[in-house]
Structure formats: structure tokens, C-alpha cells
Length: 399
Image (cartoon, rainbow, N blue to C red; front, side, top):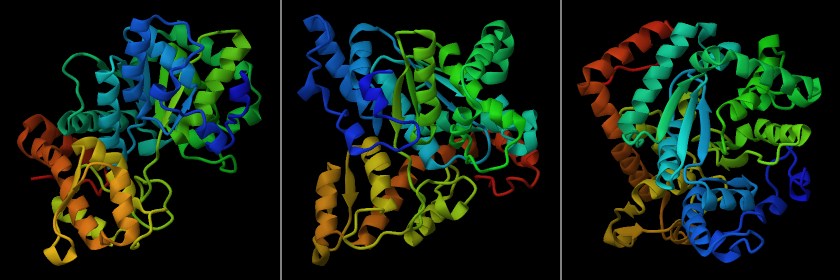
């Protein structure tokens, strides 16, 4: 393990020491890397786009070198088909995937149906899990994930593992053999569990499999949320064990908070904490109106975070309609400019919330339209409602 990595424990969130590694490539220019002028120019251009996705990157020089030298790096992401999709998973994933493909990456999205079954999602019923998986893919298509050029590939874990079982299971077994049980238990966060939870044997097996996925998919970049960083660090440690030089680069994106005060993560299981991809316009308006958004307070303000991580990356601006008395209409082109006005009290929470609701509804409207007018999508939604059979009865028919 490198000196830098010794500072990055899988036990802790990123510290200022870690954040100090996240320097803009234009300023740093990675002088120790042996690159041609053409490679360095290409690396800087691609790096700026890819690095903007991550709250944390392990390691920056490796990412820069990869993007400078490899024509089509492979980025891996994954999801459990386990219920409704909120905007953190729906819109943010579309934004991040589009940035990666624009930078020339190939994105492999791992539809972790077997993992959802191991984690007892949807009662462990694989057919229900797969129906929900197809529904979620349909949402990404509708919201604008760029799928036309073949740079994004959806892979079902059950199909891929079965087709290459002789390659997959020895890898899982080797990872399991090289790690003590407490080390694997520390990765339980990736399943939405804690070390103190009573786990089934299948759930103990889960981290070893997710670690194996990274190598099975030949991923150069692990592009997942901060809640998945522990198993990604495990993958880099495994590289040390087997003396593998090329380690997967960990690019961990920010986790959007819930709508209410103190909710660090948007939760699928709490409708009051989340904006869902199939929420009607009126539902979005009500949820944002009730959201925690104290005047002049930026820290822990979910509404400001949604603007930073969803609205500005999507529209590249944020427009607020106000009366002349309240300062008149204003368009913000940067988060820093928005925060400055908000902290001074020049932007009122009510005006911010109204503009935020409008922007979110513009993003979500194509999803509503798709499930209203596309016969195949509408039928899929009906089947999702049936297969959920009360477990997720809060799915709504759109249109």
C-alpha cells in the first residue's frame, strides 16, 4: 500500500488530508508523470471532466495517467434493483455517466440482481427484482442518460456470472481466503447495514463478491457513492496482496442528503426524505416546500445541495424569479455566487424553493411523459406494481 493510501482508511470518511489530494489538474499538472505533450493535453482535458464527478479520488495521479494514456478506460457502477428510484440515483447517475462517456470512458453498469437477492430485497424474489431492474433502466433512458453510442452497457450480474462462472467464483474465493472476517464485516455499509446488525450468511458473502466484480468487469475506475468506498479500498488492498500494479481507481461521488434536517442520505424507504423519479409535479412542490432550508444557513441545507449537485450540472445555471421589492429576477451561473447571496440574506428560502421545484420538475417531466405515452414503459410500470404486491405499493401510475 502506498504512503498516501495508508492515510486513507476504509474506516473513516475523507479528511482534510485526503481532500488535499484532490487538486485541480490544471494547477498540479502531475509533473512526476512521464507523458508526451499530446498525452498531457488530452489527460488534462479529460481529467477536468471526470474528476468533477467525485467528492474523493484515490489516487489522482493514477486517474490522470489513465485518462492521458488509455483511449477508452472502463468505469464501473452498479445498483441493486430494490424499489423506487430517487433523484440521487436517477438524475445524478445520468449526469455522472454522461460526463464519463463525454470524456471517452466506457461505462459498465452492473445490475446487481443476485446481490439484491442476497440482501433480501423484494423478499428475495429474483423475478420481482429483475422486473424492477428493467423499470429503473427505463427511467434512465427517459431522463436523458446517453445510451445511443454504445458507450454505456447494462450487465445483469446473474447472467454474467453464470456465463463466466469458472472465472468469477475462483476470484471470489481468493478474496475471501485472503481476508479475515472482521475486515469483511467492516464493509457491511455497502449493503445499507452496519457491523452490529444480525446478518445472514449470504450477506457476509456479499462484500467478497462486490470486490470481485471490479476485477471481473476489468474496471479501471470504480465510480460509486461514498457509501461504497470501503469495498473499493478492499479491492486496492487485494491488489497489494496479489502484487498487482494496476489498481482500480476509486472515484466516489457525493451522497445527497434527505429533505429533512439531519438526514445525511436520501433514503428510498422514507418517502418524506426523497424526491422520486416518478413523483408528480404537485408532489415535488409540496416536498420542497416542506424541506429544511433555514435562512442564511448553508451547512446542512439540502435545498442548496440539490442545486449544487443536480440543477447546476444539468442546466449550468439556476434562475430565480423574484419581485422587484425582493431584488428582481436573477440567474446564478456558479454555486459560489448563489451561496454568497444566500448567506447575506439576499436570496430568501421561499424564492429559492420555488425556483428549485420548477427546475426539478423540468428535469422529471420527460420521465412522466415517457411512462404516460410509451406503451411498453406503461406496461412495465403496471407489472412493477403487481410484482411489488404491497411491499412497494407506493408506486404510482403516471398519466
